[in-house]
Image (tube, rainbow, N blue to C red):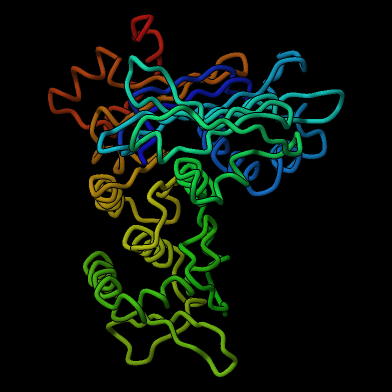
Length: 403
């Protein structure tokens, strides 16, 4: 499934943001504090709501004050936080638009799910099939989704009840008969904002079955070991790319120590003996981690990456951007935030979004809608060079209203 549309209301600085026609690779740029990280936090927030409940997610995002810290400042506590995501999904032999929406509010002092819906349209003229529709712990589900696709029978609607602070998607998405709910649940449960920390990736690790690379990268050795043992051709391709981009790199291997722990070892062409990752540069480990993430056949198809340029030489950024673009072209989807001109120089105009913040509220503008930027980039100028020159400042004033 590909995310086509996102609308966020009353989530921190994102008072009302609506992104439509999202590309397979979307790159977000803006000054520090403009709201890029807040957008990415929406995804981890949804995942936390799904894995546990809305109170847990609110406190993890906003601390002990929870809802009061997460809702946009200046907005009344009687208002709701609302997140809506629309996906393109293959249903009954055709691409359909699937919509999932979640509203969270306060009842007394307790955060609850005010409304949660999941549905899709088989035909634009027939309206939406409401697969899930819950409010305050009570709602309806469609039990015969497969039959609807096969023969268009009457809807088999069943009333159910759950705790008012949990998502219906969390439990229904575990059942085979709710196929769309299962796919949406799997997508949300699996995504992770990649904020790779080289310190977390180093040192002795234990093997974790089937896991893809986590956001912080603490399981890098485990994922690399799986690729080394189960997908040697993939691991070989990663090695080849590492040697090409970092000529001093000789070999990389994950070894199982006498204690059962995993140890990531690197070698350099100038030395015969390999050494532990504790003695490898941050940039080398980070590049290796991104290549593992992008080549892993088990990787989540939706990747969210914050500032991949950290600790990497600027000359590596253009080819790394091409790696992300290739991943998107092969059926994945990538959201990236960056300050790197070199990274931006590899990105197409229709993938670029600019953040601006005014009076504590963030807005997001698609650069394609800016006449000046579009004309220059389509005429041959590189986005990163224009970004460095400050051309994107004031973009909000150059975009016609209604774009």
